Structures are given as C-alpha cells and as structure tokens.
Image (cartoon, rainbow, N blue to C red):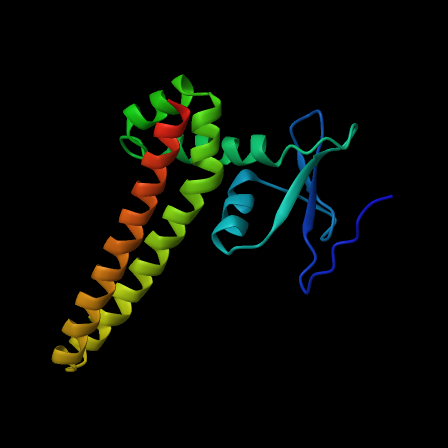
Amino acid sequence: MKAEHIDADPQITVRKYGNRRLYRTDESRYVTLDELARLVREEVDFNVLDAKTGQDLTGVVLAQVILEEEKKAQGGAYPVELLRQLVRLRDPALTDFITNHLPRLTDIYMESRNALGDSLDMVASGEAEAGEAVIITQLAAVKEQLEQILDALEVEDVSKG
C-alpha cells in the first residue's frame, strides 16, 4: 500500500521513454531538458520515472540537465576541479556532505543573497544608515551560520577518523 502525499501543489510526473523522450503527464506533452531546468529554477517539484519499469530517474535526469547546461556555458559553469572531485569522491563521506550539508549551505547562500539585495535596495533608496546596519547584521549572521556548519563538519570528520 502506498503512502498518500497530500500537498497543495501535486508533484508533476515526467515519464522517460527508451528513446530518451520526456513526457510530462499533467500536460500530456513531451518536454525538453531546458524546460525541466526552468521548472527547477521556478521551484516546481517534479519526478522522472522510467516509463517501463517505474524506476525513479529524477537524479539521473537532473544530472543530464547540469551536463547540458555545462555544454552551453562559455568556459564551463563549474570549476573543473569541482567536477573532478565529484567524480573522484563517490564515497559515503561525500554522499553525507551532499545530502546533509550542501542543501543547508545553498539555503544560507540564497537567503543571504536575497537579504543583501534587499539591504542594497534600502541603501540605494536613501536609507543608507539603516541599510548599513542591516548589512552588517546580516553578514554577521551568515558568518555565524557558516562557522556552525564548519564546526559540525569538523566534528563529523574527527568521529569518522
């Protein structure tokens, strides 16, 4: 028996066929990797299932999206050394880092970027003193969060060593 998932926005299902075509079931049409990239950027939740077996291929297709975007980028969007490390470090420690810490770091980055943008808008609109104080406070909070994450990573590293 499957667990029911109740959500205001039901997850979109995309079926992947053997001919590499991707079919969006909610709209009854084929989609491209570019369209899936757009959905990710718009924070639309979707999963990709093999049309024959029902196997979840979401991770594989998202990796394909990254590869396609990497091909299009001038000079590469990701540093070569990062890509080498991802290939080289396919071990439990990397999986743990990617699963447990990278999403938090990404969230912190996005929150900081948005907050900094808001603060810069305040400075530009003439509220300079208030804006400066807000920027300093936000940067201090970001620094503290990053230090906590680094401390957690060091503790995990020591316990595994």
